[in-house]
Amino acid sequence: MTPEGTTVEGSCPAGLERLSSLNEASFLDPAIQVKPFAYYRALRQDAPVHFEKDLGMYLVSRHEDIEAVLRDPVVFSQELGYYRQMAHGHLDEMKEILRREGGGFFPDVANIDPPRHTRVRRLLSQAFSRKRMKSLEPHFQTIVDDLIDKFVAREKPELDGLHELAIPMAIAFSMQQLNVDDLDMKTIKKWGSAYLSQFSLTNTRAEMIRAAHELAEMQNYLIALVRRRMAEPEDDMLSDIITARVPDEEPLSFEELVATARALLINTHDSMSTAFSNILFQVATNADVASQFYGAAEDDSRMGRLVEELLRLEPPVRALSRVTTAPVTLGQTSLPEGAHLLILFASANDDESVFECPRQFDPARINIRKSMTFGAGVHLCLGVSLARMQLLVAARQTARRLPDLQLAIPVEDIRYIPNAALLAMERLPLTFARQSEGGADEL
Image (cartoon, rainbow, N blue to C red; front, side):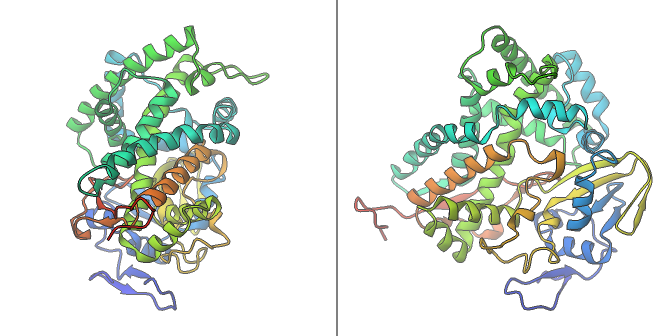
């Protein structure tokens, strides 16, 4: 129990804590950002649609209210919310820099509202089919295994689970799907950090301007890449998207293609690396999780359920925003047109009215698909099949080849990069047990 919290009575083996009061609490408090669940629980019970004065936003915390928001993309606009959150007050200045230095401003295709979103989703779904994801699985497994080969060959059985496994595997796969070999991982990480920083809700104007210059550099690269693929398609996902056609629909415009290329290069690797490093952390610090994780190494169905539950416990995307397009009542709260909402996906996944003993790790949950990890409604994550394939393969190969993962530093020394959307670790030092030639762990 946190010092400022009180324990909720109940029979759950994993404690349900809540803050004693929301009066002095702030969503932007770094301590709450790192350990938010007592705060979420207080929100759900005391103020499920809570105006956070430090943000000027309404925090939506209950599963049923979040589901209502996600099922009504007209009244609760994701597109308006995306741009209200983006650059947090400095968007016009960033747009000008991108237009002047980076070839234009290219709206994110995943966040536009219907009916335009419907057309784009139909076109993009051709490249993200489950059949295609299955065909990509061996290629991704090779990437993961090549990375693990380096660890097992080391004199000391240790690695940084974030910077040496989670991020490299995600970036390497993105590069493979775009068929680019003239970029290095350092540059892609820099561009990814610049893009993600736009949604932190805490960055200064100077930080946003610096990010805009880095994003302009990335856009110039992507504009040239899209033009090359339009002229000469290759065997890659970007070419598939460029040539995608749907009856009675216009193909993706040049601006939409550049935005899609950006998403393939950086948007996916940020959320993927955060998701997998969170999984590694839970395996390395929770004996029950570790036991079930290693026990599922040869059972993809079981490993898939385990991954879904770990993502429910710690979703990579914790919060995104919406803006109301008309007056509306959400729960018991009346909202005006233009109200800015922050949708707390991680709180929905922690809602005890939906998930019994929500802090308890239980891969056998019969309602696991009620998790909001990948969103819901028309804006359900377009790359959900891709994400699930990558996380399953990465988890399976890690369980097979890196036994007895342990955190190499005290848990209190783990540091996080503050961000309203994703809470990513700065690093994740791990150790593992070596396997003898016969397959048994060496002690």
